[in-house]
Image (tube, rainbow, N blue to C red; front, top):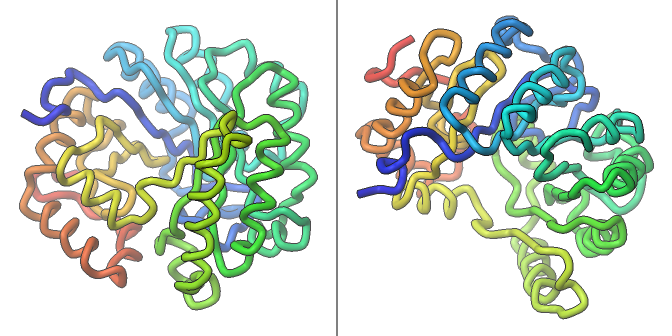
Length: 319
């Protein structure tokens, strides 16, 4: 029996609150950018209803992300409601708006981590990939997180523009007090897919990058910061999911639930369906011939990855 079939509800929910963002990152897999809020995103009342579903069904861990979640007017109402119920929270942010006052508010909640993206070691490289962003603001956010006593994670999306600064970013993350550094192969999804010929690192760049990660992961001096880079690629992740589907739901800003970030299939709608109904549909999806076949094709054919954001309902779970 699969692990997910033994669970009454998911162990983790990744909740994209919005597609709106204050940056226009070239590598964004969700195609978020300023003014890109979906027309049918959940409003504050609908989002609170989803939060109550998570609470009623004992979901232990939720990530609030986007887009940029701190742009959402009801972000703190959702975070406080979930936190008051004892749900552990992770907040994924670009850090541009996260100051000491906001970090202090977050420190009152059961925060498992604050994840901030550092996609460059210099202002020039960072801004070239994260259009409209300031590396100084991102670093200040990291310092505010640590000053508030919160756990800090850093994420790094390698592209042809920034991969040469990867080790310097690792050094900076360590100096800023991060307990974990997350990275992996660039995903050919969303904005990144449209700009693929400009962004994709070369085979030699990836080889050096992997060597750097392996060397740093094995260094005693780096033992206080975990380097997470496995699975390294979409293909590796999908292969693992086919063998052992994760006990995770990915909720889109309009309440739809995807089977996997790298597949287009929608298995439920939390605007309409209960969490338990969506969880059952999610578990069935990993036995669905359409999903299994599409995952197999995505593993063997990277050119299909951009289809991930062409959302489509499974015939067995129509909207």
